[in-house]
Length: 156
Image (cartoon, rainbow, N blue to C red; front, side, top):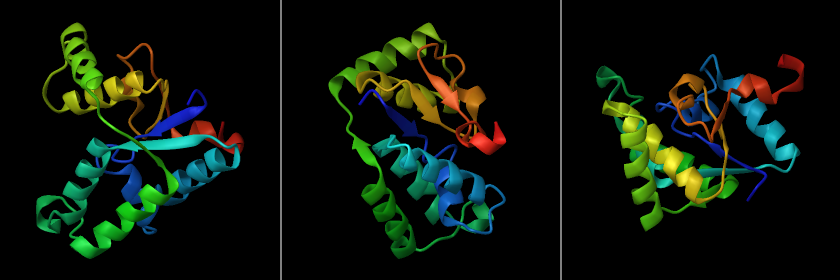
C-alpha cells in the first residue's frame, strides 16, 4: 500500500461531512481532491476511529454542535465511505506505537486521536494523510499532511 493515502475522514469531524453536505463551503474542494486521487489510482483509507468520530458528530443534535442526522442517514454515508475507501484495521502494534508516540511527542487532550491515526498509518505503511487540519499532524515527522488544495493541480 505504498501509493496510498489515509483520508482523515473525520478531520475533526468535518472532512467526510464535507463530502456529504453539499451546502458546506469546503464540499467542492474535498470532493474534487478525492476524485483527483481516485483518478490517479491512489488508494484512500479509513479507520474505525474515523468512522466513530464521524458517527458522533453526525448523530449529535444541532444544539450540541452536531449535524443532527438520523441514524439511517448517517449509516448511508458510512456505507458510501466503506464502498469507496479501504478499511485499515487496528492491531496490537497500533497500541504499542500509539503509546510511544504520545510519550515522545508529549501528546495531550484531544490530540491523542491524531496520534492514534498516526500509529495506525505507521503500522499499515502509509505516510500521507489528506486533511483540512495539517497543523494537527506536523509533529509526526514520518507523516505528510496534505491539504485538499495541494492535490488539485489548478490550485497548487
